[in-house]
Image (cartoon, rainbow, N blue to C red; front, side, top):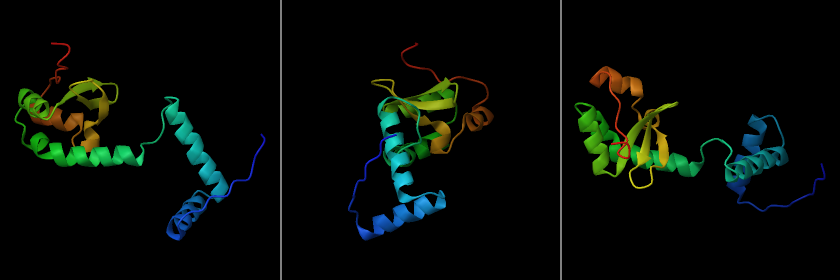
Length: 136
C-alpha cells in the first residue's frame, strides 16, 4: 500500500488523548487515526460500525425523554400509547425490541440501550408484541 505522511495540528489535550488511546490499543498514533478514518469511511458506505458519539448523544437524549414513560407503562398498549405521544414506536426484530420514528420508521436504537430490555417488558407485561403502526 502506498502511504503518505500527513501532519495534523490538534489542541494539546486532544493530542494527548489520541496518544493515550493509541497506547491502550498497543499501536501508534498513525495506526489509531488510520483505523478511525477507515471506520468512518465504512460507515459512509453503509457497513456496520461502532456507535458514534452522535448516536451516544441521541441515546442519552432519548433516555431522558422516554425513561419515565417506559418505567410507568402498565401494559403493552399503554407503552405503545406513551411512545406514540413522543412520535416513536417499538418493534420486535432480530436484535430484540427496537425504537423507531413514527414518521419514517427509521430505527434509532434498541430498547436495552434506553435501560429496558425486551425481557424486562416480557416479565412486566407478559407475552406480546408492540405494534408497528404501519402494519395495523
